[in-house]
Amino acid sequence: MITQQPYLKKVRERIKPGLDDTTGEVIATKKDDLVLVPGPINYYMVFTQIEHIIKKATDMPVMKLIYWLGKTLKDGEHLICLNLTIKKQIMAAFNMSLAGVERGITELKKDFLLFPYSKDRTAMYRVNPTFIWKGKLDDRHHAMKSFLEEVRISKLPDAEKNILKMQEMYEKAIAIEEAVYKYDFRKIPAAQHEPYKAA
Image 1: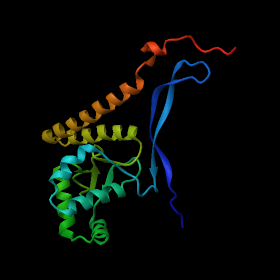
Image 2: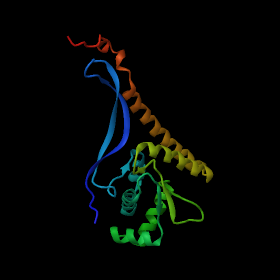
Image 3: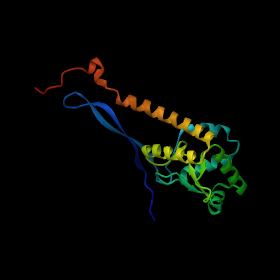
Image 4: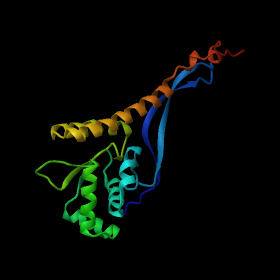
């Protein structure tokens, strides 16, 4: 039996200004964003764009299903199977009725947290990475673009507008973060001095 040990997971690498210990010069340094993960099954991220879904959720089935989706996602993927066998597993795990599980799926489809994978594979869904993701943030960004493309192919203009708006909000937040980390601190007068020279 393999036991899951806690570990630090790298979710992003940033470039930020720092000081050279020897010369005192401002240089570009790398900083890893890490999260403490109890184990791969227990690790997933929920983003603030999901707030409107949480606010309007009127019953527990929706909340339980959101939790189950995040827990069940595979690292770097956003496909999930919700066939009858899986629904029964959810029912047993969270003391839910089949009607409750179905109601939760219906509500999450309305909010585009769940999106049908295809007309042929009705039990397969894409989990919108704008809301929930497991894996590297760079991979999430690619998955969001892929998700939007699937919406476009399905010709759902209203859904596309909503999802695009959420993605634009996400991209603006990322741009602000990166601008802070990429600021050239050499422009600050206090940082403009001769490099330190050992005697």
